Image (spheres, rainbow, N blue to C red):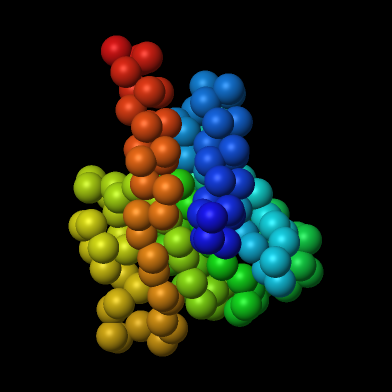
Length: 149
């Protein structure tokens, strides 16, 4: 198992916590120096706040644990391709890399709908790797939405 797959498994664990709480199963972790420094899963339904995406929650946690808003050596792992808000937060935190599981054909802002990390007019570049543990990440979403129908 690659290190990317290992950390994505951690993000999948967060997505499973989201399901347990009645949330859309998206999970994320922030990894720095070989350890998880931030964890999060969707909390939008529970909190009533549209901003509490898994990635944002994990970034808040990482910033609190690291003690700096600049996460210049950290990597974000998310079970789903980040949206515009989430990839924007990655840019502001100056993160060098994002790894995601399943593509998001409606709101994905890394490659599916938009390619924000590749926008040449932006001041910062983010390397993106999609499709890590994609089947497992997609299966979580499918299971969740099938159960709601």
